[in-house]
Length: 147
Image 1 (cartoon, rainbow, N blue to C red):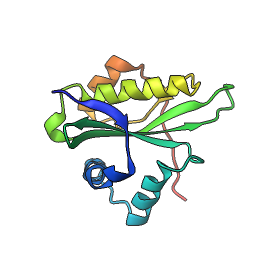
Image 2: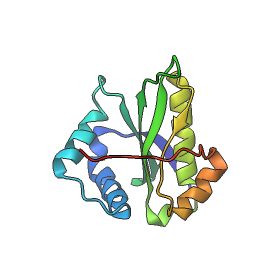
Image 3: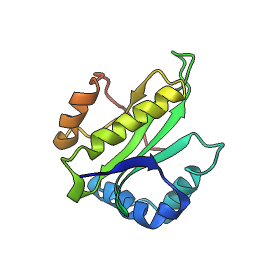
Image 4: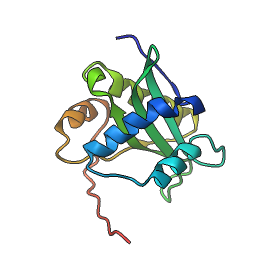
């Protein structure tokens, strides 16, 4: 499989959205259209710290990753949070997810970040087998309260 990793472009929305919906389906959520629209706009707003990369094979987007930068009370430079990663079913097991993660690592390093981190569900065994190869499990548990 020959694919390239590149930033998303405004014209990609019709090809990005099915991957975004696939990600939501996997995690059993259905985000309102307003959230999707705002998320898409943020990728192209220079004042927003939110970014997106796509894996493209020919004319088809086969994977996407969304990431953002934020500050930390523990570090001087920014930290990169890899928020969403999704690969089309037809492209799974072919290195797309790993290539998208590596591309985020490069973008984070170029931005002066000292860390990239992300979360996944404990039952996501397939993704975790990749993540165990490209990063270290931190041991931290996430607590949350919906407001």
